[in-house]
Image: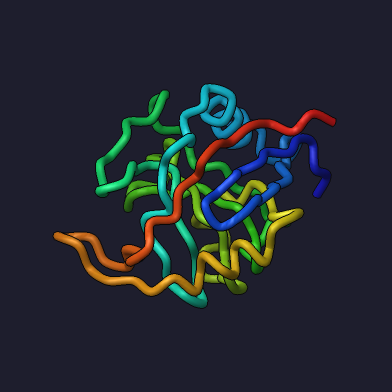
Length: 163
């Protein structure tokens, strides 16, 4: 997979740089870049942490307040050669395969059960230690949400890295 673009998340735990597979996952990458360039992810939190599986963000502000995505849901895009390996970036969605909007997750282990079911579209290039630190944050249940970090992990800013 060729990396066509890079996005940066400056988080309260450190910097994460992700490489995006724009040629192989054009619809998903275009949607993600739109949200990054609009500053959509700024001040959002990683609201779900499941050790040995994923860290998820891209849809909630501190206090678990939902933020509406910038666009309508996109159609599930799958590339058979992009697998959900440790540090893979993928789109979160509801039970409806064609429901991804702004939320994303980063795999913290190999997750073959997600292959061909979720749109994997990039990988962590720098900051794997930051992903590992986020994964270690203890979690609890808040209202109807499970796996909520006890310590708030914020995306202070996000931006595209120029080549």
